[in-house]
Amino acid sequence: MPKSMQPKRLRHPSSGGYARGSETRQRIIDSAIELFGESGYESTSTRQIAKKAGVNPPALQYYFDNKEGLYIACTASLVEENQAWLQPFLARTLVKDSADTDTCIETLCQMLDSLLERILSKNATSGQRLFYARMRLGQGPGKTAEDFSNKLFGQLFSGAVKLVARICDSPMDDEMVQLRTLSLLGQVTTFHVLRHTLFPTLTETGSVTAEKKEMIKKCIREQSLTLMHSWRKASEKSSPH
Image (cartoon, rainbow, N blue to C red):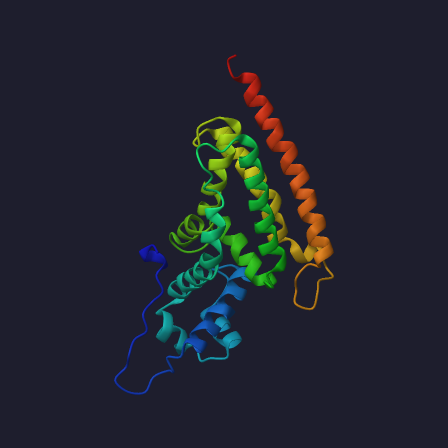
């Protein structure tokens, strides 16, 4: 993990001080994510976060030094939460060099299916989704947004771009390959940010119903297949015979 995203180590005062329990620390982080997501980094005060977390304002300094330290801890917490799911997910993109184009296309479809399942099933609050959206827009102090993007979205993008490059028979750093990859992933990430707007009636756990999930997956797969097959045909036409 980049140094800038490493959570601060707790101090150990010789006597007294705040309880060093992980539960209190995590409650502060969860509250901060909500408020940072809803209002942005600059507009959110440590006093507001402390009130929402049910702690005294000095507790934030004890655990995180300052607001920037807390923000870094928020991004580190989200990265850690997603890593267990992300690594086996990315392993699916490591197709063999001998794999044909159809295999690459199907692997990408399965990748999008898995990503949709994660997004539509996860009981994320509007504040958490907005926090992700703000990070993707580059908001936040210092290089936190860049580090966060590289750790999560960067890995997703790199895995997908390898497959799109194979389908297009083009280098990974080709600008069109990267734009096409963004177009595929963008279909899915829309449901992450706008889920409650698109689906005002959710299940009791905050997830989309199984019926609607399958409908969304079918729609995204149909669109993705149309795009990827058109890219392959364009590549075949431009290849010398």
